[in-house]
Image: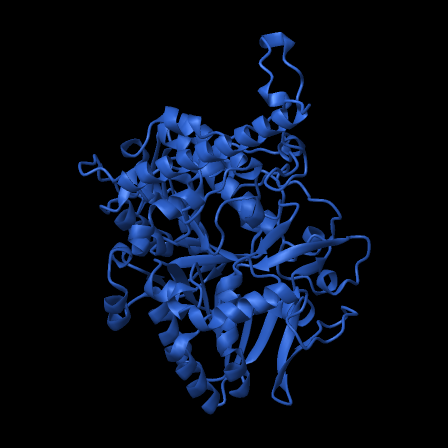
Length: 592
């Protein structure tokens, strides 16, 4: 007699026989149901996001920079220093070549401001380093300083959405430029939800400006976040800023005002509430020290460091006193060194020199790429015009370097005239955007054939490599520092050792045609030489020299590195190299 299957036995409730296969089947069914619910939820979110739109009626009060900066302590100190320098130039500059100084100088400006602080950035990340900046901003607001923050909207999802809370603080305003409609729980979901408007996704406000009392400013390549100040336990960006005082700071403020009062700038309150931002706050209770995005708590080490609001350019015994941009101490530490809260800006090397501001109009973001290219009046166009005037030498630092046909023609002309052209860019291994490397790689051989000298930043560096300027550390001659990962992020051009350009722009078609950019051009042999002294040691000992040998690319190992030359992209996997090679033919330059 055959037995009945267990599943067919009809037993009441608790008397049913235990069937492991049935339990397994239930688990499988539950998993399938859970996945289905999960995907239905995602589809619903995407559908709702796609239906979202930006508000039509937006209250956007017009405001402008401080009218009389000389009536502030910062303004009067700048005027006094210019007078003592005996110069006819109305603008002063100091290079910011290391991560520590980049952070402490910004903190100093916040603490010194009496009337206004204006911040314009492509990205402000939410981490412990920026938390310290935010606390300083709150203190400034509490003493009556008006704070305006203009932020591109692209990186304001997930954890970084918490930055938007500043919009609801007293004496603070925060506007988002060219916002993307839809939710902010995930950057990936935001992109997917806006695929019907790729042009809006692509066109970003890439400017980086930090102005105190319309008297003293910082501009350059850095965004705000731990990776830009050498505090990431993973990869840190190597960057250069410039402190700018006097008339050029007022020019930067006028540019800020143009963007701030533009219809593309939306107050956060018009897009979301404080409660909605709070709901996006990630659960950090289970995070472990040292995990990516969670740097060591460095605030406690700086509790003894502080200054009053009016003391930023006065003697400060407790503050770090920078004597130069030398980053030997900055790089030699085997652990991440804590960042100081302030610095004595008087001790920097200030150069008073003729200068001009190169800045895109806000309307570039809304313009058609073809019309932008035809007009030839962008920041990058201005830079190319300055580069074309080179007579002896051209030094270019650009992390994302996709020259395009026009710039290639310019390089060919420079080389025919005997101008030495050197370019420092990222290697495939150090590039945080491998897709951008695709565009560069397609021009690499042609550049070498015309005599352009190419240097590619090495990803793995000895010590805690966070800055330009230390040949010894990057070559490994200082022991015990271990190694760290570095990615080039500086945007610098030196023309004929007498003209220095520092800004937010890359030398690529994205910066030229799609993003808005800003740069300062300074005519001074002294500050140009200072910039070259910062950059050249890294080219010699922290970068591969790319050459042609028998019509094949060869990467020459950095001096003193004990590494071997390579016939393939150094420090990369075969899979990554294959992916870049396959992507190459299909990626247009302007998208990279």
